[in-house]
Image (cartoon, rainbow, N blue to C red; front, side):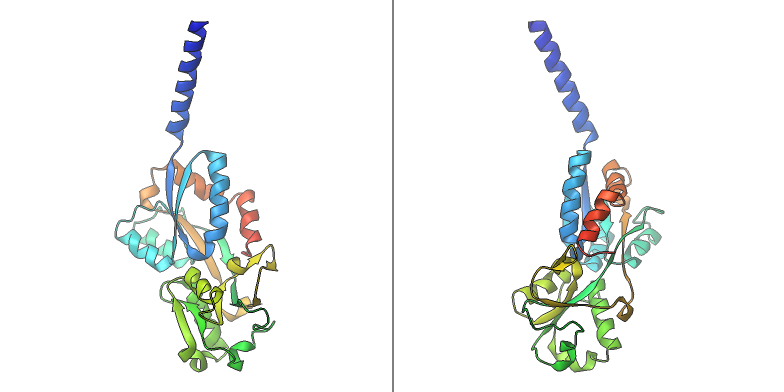
Length: 250
C-alpha cells in the first residue's frame, strides 16, 4: 500500500510538472476600446489553454511608442491596421502574423437619456457645453470622430467645446461622469448584444469615416512564446467571434 501511494504521488508530481511546463504567460497590449470583450476572451482562453494572459489597456499610439522603447508586450491588439503594419516593417513584429480581429463602430453618446437624437442632430443644435473625443494623434477612434465632424461641416463650430481624452476609455469616462454632456465613444462601451445599456446614442453611419479596422499582430518579443501564437489563433475562433459580435463589433 505504501509503495502504491508513493508511486501515485510521483505520478501526480510528474503530471503537475508537465502541466506547468506547457503553461505560459502572454503579455498583451490591448486598445482601450476592446477592454470589455478582451477580458471575456482572456478568461475563456485561459480556461481552455491553461496559459495566463497579462493584459494592459491603452491608446494604440502609446503602445507603439512603448514597443519601440522595449516594452515586454508579446501580442498587440491595435485599434487600427496601420500600427501593426508599421511594427512589422520596422522588425518589431513577426511578418505574416497580422490579421483583422474586429471592425469598430463609432457612437455619439450621452449619459442623459434624451439628449442624443436618432440622427445626431444635437451636434449642430448647440445644446451642450462639452463634446468629448479621444486624442486623434494616438487613438484611431478620435481620428474617426474628427473625420465625422469635418464631413458634417461642424468641426469649426464645436472646436471650443472639445475636451480630449487620452484614449477612448477616458473619453467614455468624461461622458459617463457628466464632465462632458456627450462624446464620441466606441460602440463596445455602451451596447451589449445590440441594445443600448444606458443614456442616449446615435450610431454613426460608417460612411462618415474610414473603416475602423482593428488588427492584431504577434510582436517580436512573443516570437518564442507559444501562448502568444495560441492566443492570436484563439481570437479567430468561433468562440471569440461570438464575444466580439456581442460587444458591437463587425
